[in-house]
View (cartoon, rainbow, N blue to C red):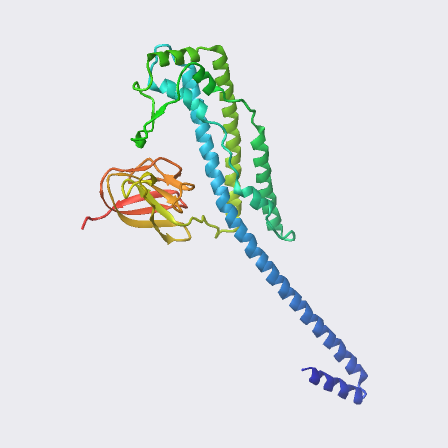
Length: 355
């Protein structure tokens, strides 16, 4: 091709056709400039395509971590609402009440403090790379950073009141509940075999103590503020999840190595049991299935044979799969097809023929 151009130029000059030569030269320069422009455009397109792909990959990570945040906020709202409810019940208790819930409620107040929750979303958002020339990406990052700022503000906004309930209880010889390690399913012991009439008398006297009542009332106010803060965080998380999904409709929840474990199969970890792996039948919607013989007992779902991420429920044969919830009770033995939908957060146990 270069030899052809040189031949054309030489012939034009030799034939003394200068005007035609100039027009040809200009055309050649324009052709070269067009080629360079197209090459640059192609390079920019490839760069933007790679950046967009990386941006969406990070968005999918955030879609998952903010879903985890949302679960945490809902869990904390539920926890602190329970504390408020128990506090109200204790403040209105009468002298004749010697129900086991009395001492259980007092120790319950001592066991619920703020949990340290290091959201993975914070670091991912801080390190998120985006194309500042892309208005959609810039706006989305702005929204994500506002979510980060809200986490920082709300984590410091609640007044702090020291939890001195254990000291009040121990000073009055009201022991922490016992634990039946031989029958772990029974859990903590709050019945008459553990506490006597003197313990209940001391508990009633404590609830009539002006200083103690002032302390748990102040704690109640703190918990109420925390409920409001967690509701604000939850609502913002829900909004961010929708924004991410609008920008990246293909973003999905990513769970790996989901399994099922429990006394309906081989037992829990206390007897050395491991999770029975489930099969991912729908990657897009994160739907897991397995066909299994179950005994009368209980089961839970979890990831990577660990309790870091797990689901339970309070109904059978179907219900909502809630994070870190109670075991799903299996009332009837038999062969079941078990379906766990981690997009809709539901589960279902379908009884099969026993053939």
